[in-house]
Image (cartoon, rainbow, N blue to C red; front, side, top):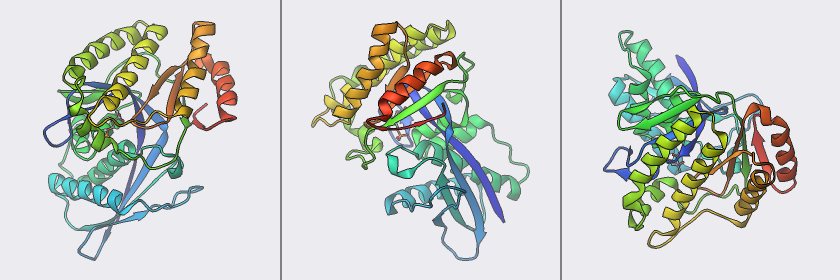
Length: 316
Ligand code: PMV
């Protein structure tokens, strides 16, 4: 038998950075916008051998790149946790693939762990029709594989705090998204390692409070449809995270000359027009831009300018 599900990626506007104890418990609340155009598809099929295995999933129009040995092990480790928690019987082939290029340095852990969790739940429902888990309970399972994946179960807005992940009703439900691919190289420091390393920064102990204040301010700004105030808070929070990286002992970082070039291009529209995209970066060199639908022409203009230097993936 075969089961399938998919899940989207998400971009945090208030970042999850820093963990408490084990099991990906975040040291601060985070808020994200779900990227429904960047998805992972997972298929789970029963098989007869003893071990679960991973294979690339054939998707129309997409290559079937293998994931690294380490990546496969992490994925199957989460699958064995899901098997245990959802009481799944049998052995399986787990297949996965993304509808976005795998060679562009875009993290797929959020979408892939969320998709794996949702697919495993399909198997559980077949094997045990009484099972009835809420999305928040499923997000809690997904979080144990990859923290940021718990937010991918909700759309378009998702909040993750001590109560778990859930959706939050906010305006701007249909944003234009661009991710500028500055580098497609594997990161020297993975985000899992970054969560640990930042505890050596003197700025880390106050991060929880700063993120909480900023989250409350951002929720209010978005509710009031104050685009500019939201931009300022989103801008400050990704720099806060990158400052944690650069003030760790030893310091590490992801910002490159290309990232700064794109940040400046996007910032200039704010200076010249008093309007522009929301700008953010994850633990990597790529730059994410979000626009309101009425900013379509601006998004097109920036895309043309940036595309002469870098590859841009978009839902424009
Ligand atoms: O889910 P992880 O462990 O890959 O953490 C990712 C954290 C950031 O992407 C840097 C920020 C976030 O909140 O998504």
